[in-house]
Image (cartoon, rainbow over all chains, first blue to last red; front, top):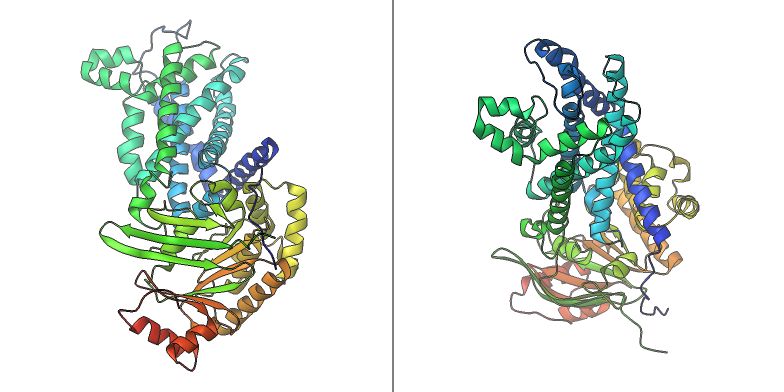
Length: 281
Length: 251
C-alpha cells in the first residue's frame, strides 16, 4: 500500500460557514435540551421586574435623563439592566459549560477541528451570543404585557447592541473558563463576577444618584464595562446611539476575546501549564 | 515513485509538567497501513503523547509529523488527516447519534448531505445502523465506543489514533472493538496507533512501541521484540523490556 504525503486540504469559505453553522446548531440544541436553564434564565429577570421593581417604584424616583424624554417608571428604567443581566448570566453559564466541556472531553472534539482555533472559539462565542439574544427577546415579549413598551423600532435597533454585549460578556466568560481549573459550582462566579458587575453598574440606579451617595462607588461604576453595556442597550432600545458606551463595549469585547483566544492557544496558553484536561497525564 | 511517507513520525519528543519529565526524547514512526500498538503501563506517558499528537498541548521539544505534515507548521492540514478516539468519552450524551455525527462533520467543514451519507455508511459498518436516532445516553458502553470509532472516521482520516479504547469494557466488547478496528483499517486503508497496557490486544503482524516512564524502550515488529528479549510471548517480552533499566533505543 502506498500513502503519499498529504497535500494540505483546502478550507473553503463554504466550509467555514458549515463549521460555524454546526457550532451554533449544537449550542441551540443543547439549550433546548436544558429546559431548566431556559426557564431560570427567563424567571430571574422577571422576579426582578415583578417584585423588586414594583417594590422600589415608590422609593426611587427617576428624573428625566437621556435617552428618556419623559419621566419613566422604575420598571422601565431597570429593563435594559435586566436585559444585560440575562446576557451576563448566559455568558458566565456558557463559560461554565466550557469548563464542563473541557472536563468531559467535548472541548477536545472542538479543538481537533482543522479550522483555526481562533475561528472555533469565535464560533462558540457567536453561538452563545445568539442564545442569549433569544432569551432577551423572550423577556421583552413578557415585559411588553407588563406595560414596558419601548418604541416598535427599538426592538430592531437594540439587536446590534445585544449582539455586541453578548460577545463581550461571552468573551469574558470564555476568558474566565480558561483561567479556572475546576468549578465546583456556580457560586464562585456569582460572588466574584456577576454580583459585583451587576450591582456596581447603572443597571439598577442611574449613576447621578450613585454619585450623591458615594463618589467612590460612582467611579467604580464608571469603569465597570457592564455599566457601558447597560447604557448601550438602554440607548439602542430607544433608537439612540451612545458612542462612549459603544466604544467601551466594543473595546472590551475585543480585549476579552483576544485574551481568551491566547489563553486557549496551546503554544502560549494556560492549558499546557495545567496538564491534561480531564484524563491527566 | 518516491519513498513512502510514514503515517506518523515523532522525532526527539520531550515533554515536562513543571519539574516532572513526562516524555524523554521519544522517537518512533508508524508505517503507512500498519497497526501499531503503543504499549505502556499507566503513567508511561501515553496520554501525554496523545495530547501532543492531537495538538492539545504545545510541543515543547522535538518534531511530530502526520503524513509528512509538520504539526506545528500545518496544524489544520495535519488535523484533517487525523481521527481520534480519546480514552474518556467525548460524545454529547443528550444528542442523538446522528446529531453527534452531524456536529463532528460540521467541525470538519463537511455539509449535511455528505455527512448523512457517511453516517449511514459508518453506522452500518459498526453494526449500529438502527440506532442513529437514539440518544447517546441510551447506548451501552461498548456501543458508545463503536459510535466514537465510527465518528472518528467520518472525515476520512488516514491515521486513526486510539487512547486505550477498551478501558472499562467487558471481555466480549473488547474483542468486538478490536476486531472492528482491524476490519475498518483493512476496509478504509489507513494506519492505526493503538495505545494500551494489555499485551493480549497485540497480534503477530503488529508493530509495537514500548513506552516506560516517559522513555522509549523498544520499537519493532512483534517477532523482532520476541527475538530481542528471547521471550516466548509478548507478555513476557513486555515485562523484560520494562525491567531493563539501562537499555534504551530502538530494537
